[in-house]
Image 1 (cartoon, one colour):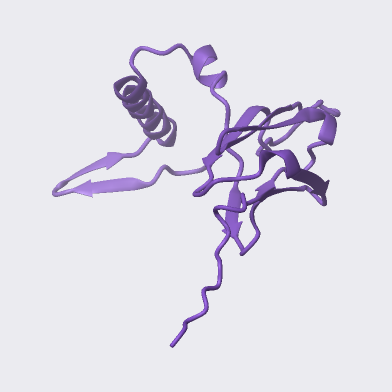
Image 2 (spheres, helix red, strand yellow):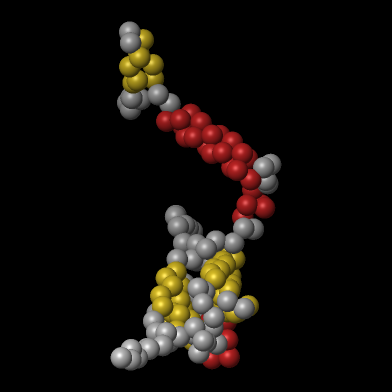
Length: 153
């Protein structure tokens, strides 16, 4: 016969009900979500896009953005550049295959946004998807590229 763990509180020994503890945590998380987002229905929370992990690097000629999108096909992606803001959007669907025991993979709409730190040449932007990583290369404008200045004298 399984015994529930006991919580000592002075002389009184009370039994801990693990199910009730999880219900309390769930209720508290619901209160926290309501404080943060107002009275939002769960369906509305599910409609909020998730943000994939990404890196933004800069070299002398361009900005390079690498976005982790494992399992995403290029037909599920859209890449836009508006002025200096790069926007990567898409949607991932997980088709159930048999009886699912656990689901930890992200699904649904996603959106990654970043403002590039300098002026860019929007006519020469390239994007490549390989091994679950989207690499977007945004060339700098000629005015934004560093120039070497000779010192005279």
